[in-house]
Length: 226
Image (cartoon, rainbow, N blue to C red; front, top):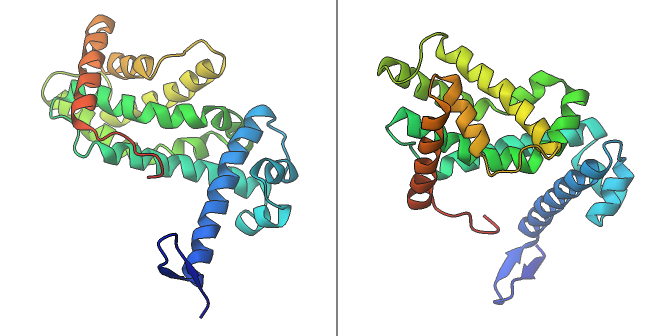
């Protein structure tokens, strides 16, 4: 079996090297598609290939169609959301603080993909975009239910409904961010999440400030390449 050598001189099986190259190509194509579709929602597979610096055949080897590529971007966003929430481990025990922490951790993922989500929603449908939020849904419902049991959050609607409302508002906020109306780092999103469960805007702003302190103290920073 043919082997390749690492910089240290260690032999690497050719099969592993090919898999690593395939993963790198896929990531490059995803990043190129994000850029290309953000500039032109009607960008073709040829446009994506040029942006990625690969031949069209390489793009089709990973994504058989433009729809498959768009779905791949949505899947990438969902995987990034899982990774972002996993970095925090268990959220704070206080449901107010936990709600703000989850919102602040999730926002950068949506912010990175927000232009794509805007046009992908039109091509794939609203439900497909809501599906990518699934990793955060069960955890968010659990936190809201806890807050309701403890008398901290309002019980005017079931937890599942409040979380569904938050998801719908999320898409609206992404649209507002696309328009340049919202330019913060997730603070507006976190405040909205708290207001929906019955916390006043002023109190919500205080909680969000505390959430940032918790994140800086408890969440490991993202290491490039991880």
